[in-house]
Image 1 (cartoon, rainbow, N blue to C red):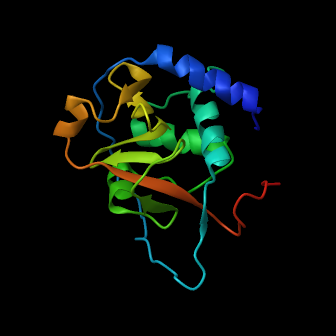
Image 2: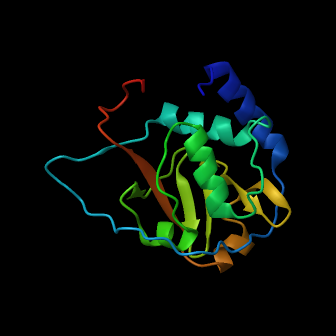
Length: 172
């Protein structure tokens, strides 16, 4: 599913009106996840800013059905899958520790993961520090530097690694 630039801009504009603080639910379940190993000779390409905006557009699209998803890690996994960036399911704890599908970054961009031990979301707007996730009352938006999230411990950001990509090239 692809979105036009106008759709993404409209979604981000609406985002400023959607901010609703909430409490998180812990994600459960442990998966088999391999730790990240860096290949310095053949560095993998990560999501571009436009790819990240596509992830954000899918997350904010009210037509995106989440079905029976009731936790943060399954919601994030479903959004990435619907945006065309699939990866094997990983719990928020596994994502926090690092997986081979994401590279840790210091400065997030839209579409990156924001992860605490036990909770994960999708960065919507780094300047506003907003993210989308499954919160106490269902899917919603909050600020990742809010007091509640700071009490959860150190935050980490991860960017999806595109297999066989060459930077800003369009996906088929």
